[in-house]
Amino acid sequence: MNTATPNATRHAGLLLAALTLLNVLNFADRFLIISFSNAIIPDLQLTNFQFGLLTGFIFTLVYTVFGLFTGSLADRVNRPRLIAAGLLVWSGLTAATGLAKNFVHMAATRMFVGVGEACLTPAALSMLADRFPPAHRSLAGGVYYMGIPLGIGGSFIFAGLVGPVLGWRGGFLVLGLLGIAAAVLVALLMRDPPRGTLDAGADTAHARVHSFAESFRGIAHELRTNPAFSLTLLGCIAVTFVQGTTVLDLVWWVQERGYTETEAQRIYGLVFLAGGILGALIGGVGGDWAHSRFSAGRLKFLAWVFLATIPMLIGYRFVSGHTVAFYTLALSGAILFMLVFGPAVSTLQELVPLQHRSSAVALFVLCTSCIGSASGNAVVGYLADALTAAGGAEPITRAILYSQAVGLLSIPAFFLAARWQSRRAVAAVAAAQPSPA
Image (spheres, rainbow, N blue to C red):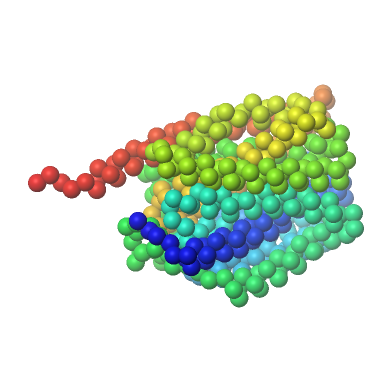
């Protein structure tokens, strides 16, 4: 059993706080384009499909592919220095986004923002796994992923406050300069924890891999031979596809639910902020609780929660704006948005050998961002344009509902992954038993 000294606990808490703040900045930068969607789309004369590409594939393809390399690097090099370098790149390009004059300019800056942001999460989550024991990793991951609602909600609130004064271009410049300052602080103050010391029986002598090829071979082997790992990834892809379909939510609030742009930015930001924090905590605490009581408990927890909450996701799209029901269901959707990350990422890291943890996180980011949320962005944008051209009431509502049907795949995927993880655990216990004399 691993025990933590008060000093180690304090260091773990400080590291978690610092990395969570960086993730807040990460998602604030990433979602500022969505926060200013009602200004950027007409200013740059974009279609819904082009906007879906900017927030989806154009950013995400570079972000996720480059993330495979940074995941491998995080298994090999000093992780805080890698984070600082990435933060400097993405913040500089965020500031440059404010200079974009058309779709091509915006696409170029978004691509290189993705290069920088790819450095953060694989390194950060592997560092947290080296600071927190297994019993608390779901909660640690949930707190880290609280950076998503804090960053996204904060970006909407930031846009609502700064936009009327500096415009959308000035907003990008200010946020980019904040990130550059943060990069300097990370490089000077953050320390890399030793690898694998909190994992019972971990081979810390081989905790690092020595080449990109070794990383890729190792993670490809897990995909081929570890059904629990592959099915967990599949479930996460389905969930994040649904998340991607919400890219037009702010436009939907304005065009089909009767809100003004500033009103939607502020209220949506607050709702997402509150719901996302609750979701991260519920996912982290609930995942660790289920892990302590059931075999493959985190995966079962996710499967049952998503099965039980489908009616809320559907109902949200049918109620009128400016009502208690609308805000309640919007809050519930924000909670569900964030619930998956803590349980899923901690499970994925425990399903692979220690030396491939960062690469597993990088693969998670690739699959959920590129195949999941980016596909959701593009599909909902395409359907919204097609349904608008075809006529009929509330085309964005229908586009979102049709797209979100993909999320139903998450339920059987998590249930089956839990079954395979339970079998894997039984097999490991059997293999550890001494042979009869």
